[in-house]
Amino acid sequence: MKLPRSFEMTVTRAEFLRLLPAAVGGSTFVEEPDAFLHRDPNRFWRIGFLPLPELRIGLIRLVRHRVEFQFEGYAVDEIEAFMARFELYTRRGGG
Image (cartoon, rainbow, N blue to C red; front, top):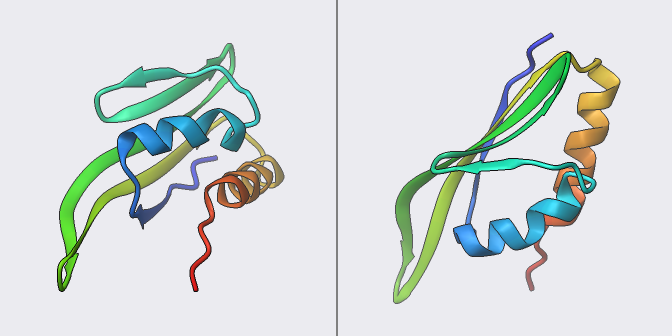
């Protein structure tokens, strides 16, 4: 089953890479220029990481990326658990 998901993140590649191992539960992955991939014999996930134009708010400049998820061979509940973990480890608070 394929359930693609995508959203925008204001994060640098370096910060994303720092957060990614915990966000994917320690799964091994391969880094490519525009994605991060994990493969098992019968299934895989892919996290696309595509640069977007910088967000400008007055003098503030924020680096942005589109993050796209693709899953093959995972059950819906596994995907939901993966996404919940990813969101927990990459969530940012403001105030």
